[in-house]
Length: 116
Image (cartoon, rainbow, N blue to C red; front, side, top):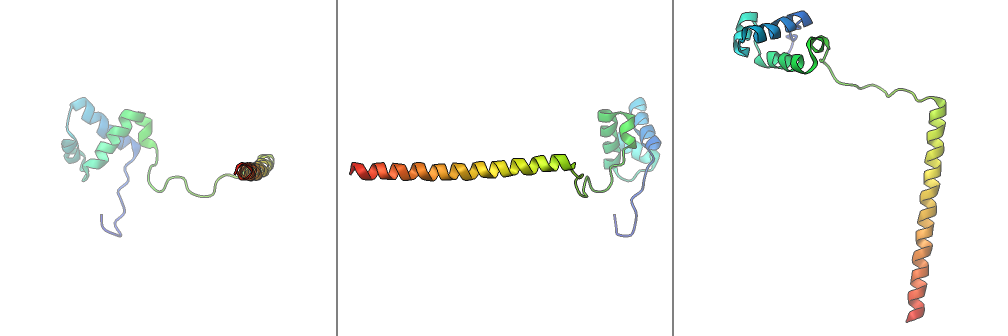
């Protein structure tokens, strides 16, 4: 599709009619393209997949544009404080374990030194 030409938008009722016609009359995607004047077979294939997976309601879901995005929702003050406290506790635990490991290694070096 070239720049400046907007993509065509099909209403959910039309999408449903195309897919149901294909299923009821056992016509191919190519035949549906000709009958309903749709230029891209991928569009119809996508509609059919959505119809089979989600039902006719799935055809009404807007799927264009980027997913998600934006800022994540704000946490409540209580949850934020709990996370900060847990983070501080975990940092203290990591520091403690590092110091303990250093002491154990130092003690092992001393023990090896005495044996020689």
